[in-house]
Length: 225
Image (tube, rainbow, N blue to C red; front, side):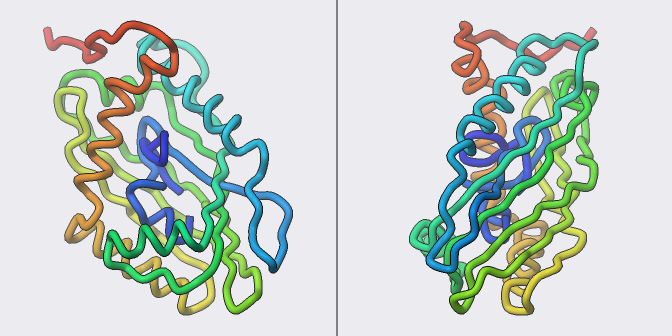
């Protein structure tokens, strides 16, 4: 998911917005912690550095195609301002009625699954269950939100074709919880963000990773024998 979100999962509302979250198989983006203040949530100064480091590790697996080596494991975080969330809500026709939001998650993805997605055959990547811990500003209070999610991605010829958020559980105030479940179900049944998510995942795998590693582009999909 990961630049602006991808290949990967994610936040209360951002977790549900393709541009910021999802988490999905080869580039799971996301999320965050830091000092809490009812006056608003300030981004953790290390958010970008952690994301870039995770992108580099993931891209090394994707481009290097080495079957042996460590799996992907990153702690990611992301903070969104109320203004940004409202703007995204208008584009997706889903109203964001709260304040700032911040999320964090530990992204874990086996190397064999990442390479399997690039094997050139049909492949369904089933992400392990991830816990996304968020803080949402609501009624001048900071309220905790916990989301359990296990995204799935269907690949064909090394490209993502279908994504499911697969939200399992949501622990949050009733109004926040209702929004998350509504958007998650709309996405998995009607694909309201699907085109954008697919585009971002494939762009990250086949274009962005070469920029991250500063290498010339090449075909990284294994040819069928």
